Length: 104
Image (cartoon, rainbow, N blue to C red):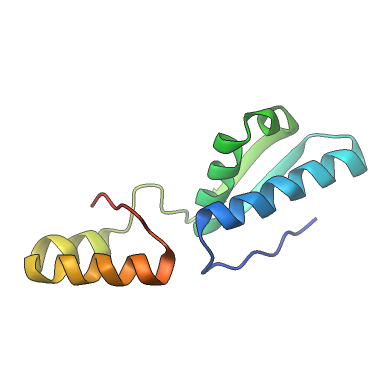
């Protein structure tokens, strides 16, 4: 079953929706689920499983496609090569995406 998430929502918000979807699928089919996630969905999924440890036993596997587990090289290069722009970029990111801290 497909779970639609808002890709511009925070990881915490999407992870809650994914956790709920895992529980519903398990109750309905009484089987472990295999999750296929694309891009930020991979991060959202990992967060769901880290926050809700009991869900890990309900998941048979996770397949991620183009998930940015290592961050974004383009954003990192921008931050490191434009020193004065770093602060304004992080302030903008925090307003847009709800980021409270960032390691680049």
